[in-house]
Length: 263
Image (cartoon, rainbow, N blue to C red; front, side, top):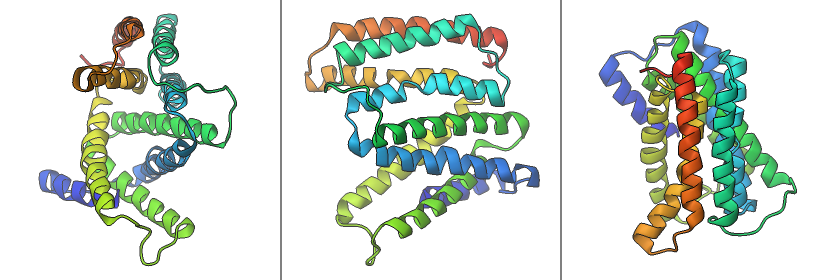
């Protein structure tokens, strides 16, 4: 994340000729880097070690509801009945796919250490994206500048965390080739492309709507598995997509009416 922050800083400075932050934004940027970048990633990576994919996807599916709660608290966005119905329709389609068509693996409802960590990761991520939307609405800072400082601070915190809990002799890497592949993928795809794209979308859409749209990830996985790998195509996928589309349209129209979505 430090490497991504340095690269993004160079690109942003080349475009804007400045990386200056107003003093009033120091604390919000630090909270964003601490919650949405550092704590969300640490809790996610540690929690995923002890979970099946189906349970992990189900916990991630709670993000639209958590985002709606934080949007109500931080941004005073109203949660209407139509938006609530749309959220529950999407969640119903999501759960129907997990149980009857997709991710495989039975799991219980017991909440353990891994489940709690992933739930915390979902909460931290939702809080961070909502805070980022608030910063964008209240300042004229570009997405690039905000992400530069958030990534650098979170990267430093992650490095300090690693030095405290991992064995640096000389570095905590056992497979250098796999490490380099992973670093390139994380820096380019996750940090430089996805984080900045999501942040740009927050200027036009609410964090609730974007979190809801992220529920289609397991559906796309099933579709590409059928298209590219010849995996079985489940009818529950069609049911899930139908409910997702209906719920998404309801939320979109309601937030457009409320003025939370920019035309």
